[in-house]
Length: 309
Ligand SMILES: NC(=O)c1ccc[n+]([C@@H]2O[C@H](COP(=O)([O-])OP(=O)(O)OC[C@H]3O[C@@H](n4cnc5c(N)ncnc54)[C@H](OP(=O)(O)O)[C@@H]3O)[C@@H](O)[C@H]2O)c1
Image 1: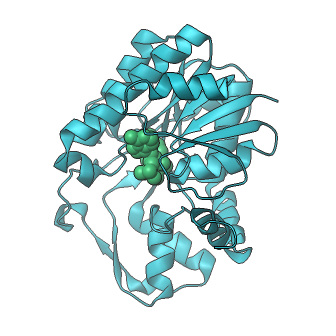
Image 2: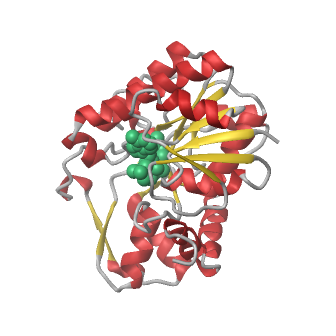
Image 3: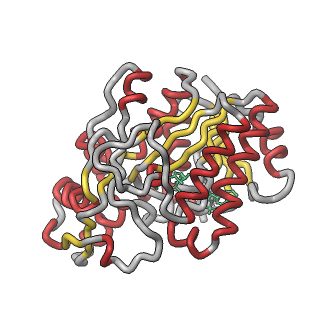
């Protein structure tokens, strides 16, 4: 059992990772104030404030730190590049420094979208990144900052879906929410990605830490598909109407931040070093659906309110 400090504990990855990790480990989450109750210990902190990092490390004294804090909205990064750099580049560098000083294992979460998607076929960890926007550039610079300061750190480039605190953060929730209401939505046929159920991602990240892996890894789903195809798979699994999803090009979406067309990442290095295959997409989707049946979305949303409030 390790003592794990998770930043961004109110986020889509943070909350689900904390819930998975607490089954076997002692978990402390860092939160700015959204979590009014949670089944793990919370430290309230704004990580951009001076001296906050030292204070939380002093208070939590973790064996491992997993950094899930970020400005993860591509649109918000384009609108506020300074905040994007503060959170996605400078903060990981500062956390890496503090962890190296205190001999804390550091796992930093990065993104699949460091690639511009112009390659045909899969991207490996050896491929040169070519970030297409503010989000991806600041995330890539965050990777470089971590690598430079703390070469023992682990960096995971991820893509995932699951149930979030606010109920609207992930692409899986987008399709379930809209199709359940009978709304028509668009699904991009020309964005290929490798979605992983956030609980599978959480378990794999914990396994990587337990196995003492170091350096850069692609930690995404083993199956590539378009965002349209993902929507269709979600609709089928939830018994919703897939014909409400219109196939569309991302170029016609009106989104301000540029999206990469191909984010098919190889997980060969990861599965080799773990010594097993990654979970299948259909198993993850089954898990996402089972959580829905078991009212897991309502359960985690309840952590936003005071008990008995
Ligand atoms: N979602 C995806 O599919 C995806 C894909 C690729 C990579 N990623 C990466 O995965 C990681 C987690 O993403 P996510 O989707 O879970 O993001 P998210 O839901 O937006 O969560 C971000 C977290 O960072 C926290 N945070 C922001 N500013 C902070 C500050 N000043 N001090 C302390 N905490 C702060 C947020 O707290 P508040 O709730 O208080 O704002 C929130 O808990 C990120 O590194 C992201 O780049 C995500």
